Amino acid sequence: MESKLKHNIKITLLIIGMFLITQLIGLFIFTTYNQIDLPYDMQPPKEIQERPQGIQIITAFVIAILLFFLLIKIRAEIIIKAWFFAVITLALGIAINAILISLNLIYYTQLISLLIALPLTYLKVFKRDLIVHNTTELLIYPGIAAVFISLLNINWTIILLLIISLYDIWAVWHSEVMQKMAKYQINNLRIFTGFFIPYASKKEKQKIKELKEKYSSNELEKQFRKSNIKINLAILGGGDVIFPIIAAGVFYKVYNSIIPSLIITLFSTLALLYLFVVAKKGKFYPAMPFITIGIYLAMIVIKIVF
Image (cartoon, rainbow, N blue to C red; front, side):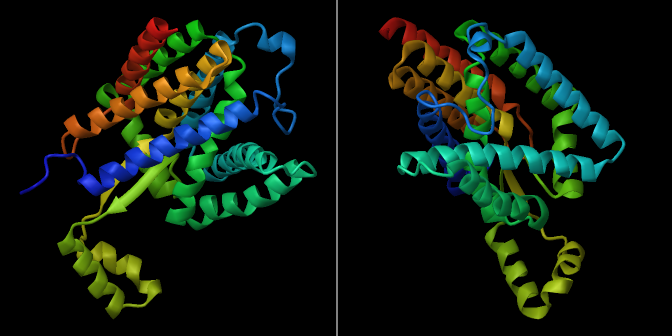
């Protein structure tokens, strides 16, 4: 019996599992940095932390998106890759630094973190290793989220989630900008900002196996194209992963308790699972509206419980 899911059960559970693991890593990282300063001079001054920076953050996101579109328009792949390289290295460094500190390493943790982050970033950006790509995604978004959590309060988090969700709806269902961006990243940059899992049916896997046995590695890509082998893609954008982490971190900061954060993580994961269950094959869906509704429901539960 053919599955009605957008992706098969194994792939669906894998994507949901990676999303959940990233959220839990995010919980660990922002609770760690709640006690110590962020590395690499990323800790905002106290006077800035005491005033919500919602407008500034939204403005920064708008500028970043517009700049990315401009760079795509002028096909500035080298600049985009350099931008990705810098952001990924810094995010990995922040995340790895928290892990090293939790292991009671207190000397040169920032330097060691960068020495670990740099080769991982190189493999991710220039070598397109699937395992490295998805493994580093688990750490990148918690690292980025840690920077923004201290700058937001609950009200601005609610507004930010709404704006991002409306943008996601427009970008996926109306303008198809998100699909074009994803294709550009995959085909031109050979990078994707999010979880990326290619998979094939048993029939297609057999064709791939036969090609691998017949041709050398240098000729494989050309033969794949000639054979018209259908590869399915299960993807989840980075924004869909990072904003629940930010929301959970803000509630941890406000309530000084891990319970509200766990409630947000639970509801956002269930919301994403619901999307994958109702989504139809061959169609694109904006994930943020579903995740945002899940987070809003979590906020209601938190309000009742606390």
